[in-house]
Image (tube, rainbow, N blue to C red):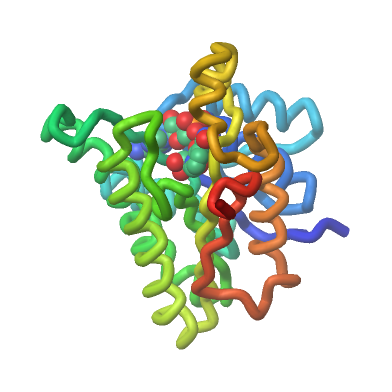
Length: 252
Ligand SMILES: NC(=O)c1ccc[n+]([C@@H]2O[C@H](COP(=O)([O-])OP(=O)(O)OC[C@H]3O[C@@H](n4cnc5c(N)ncnc54)[C@H](O)[C@@H]3O)[C@@H](O)[C@H]2O)c1
């Protein structure tokens, strides 16, 4: 019996590095996984990987969760097909970077839209279904919520990820009244198909890993290990917390 047996888990960004690892692992733990991504090819690759293991990736792509109507349609379709939502894993995000005086207004709004607006939309539309199940929300923040970066201009990203943490705390407060837990995860640098090319350049790698006590990036599966625990009944006394998983970056 898996740790998430028969739970209906909605995972966003299933075309990306951590979303793919989460979809595979949650299915292995017995969950019924509903995914989406605004890049259809990535989501379909994940579906194929799951199928090779005998699992189904439900949901659809492309879905742009920064558009509240598409977010609602994705949630409604999941409930129509599976009858309930036990876990909402808000993993998807997209950001633009640049030094604060160079960052365009468009890039600022793009980041806020795709890192925090989308969390509000999925949460808003899933909320009453989660309350029916006494379910759990996992929101993916970042160490960018907790400290700046010398390597890149992350002002919009850090503002959005800081908002993810504080949004989660308020969800925990409102959720306690109806049995919904809300928890955020703040990963440090994680090697994904998107970030791996940067790691191949020795200088860039050193800059990105500066201060990481373990002197390596994290793997998507390591973040997902934590998410499985938070999503499971083993974490029944945990709500409102943020869990940093960063190889020791914030320890110094
Ligand atoms: N990779 C890292 O180093 C790192 C570090 C800290 C936090 N994070 C966070 O972890 C989460 C997962 O990121 P990842 O590393 O797997 O990156 P990724 O880019 O591989 O995956 C993110 C996925 O979200 C999708 N997405 C983005 N905006 C969307 C939207 N509006 N609608 C639907 N899908 C959308 C993308 O298409 C992509 O497939 C993100 O919230 C990210 O900010 C990543």
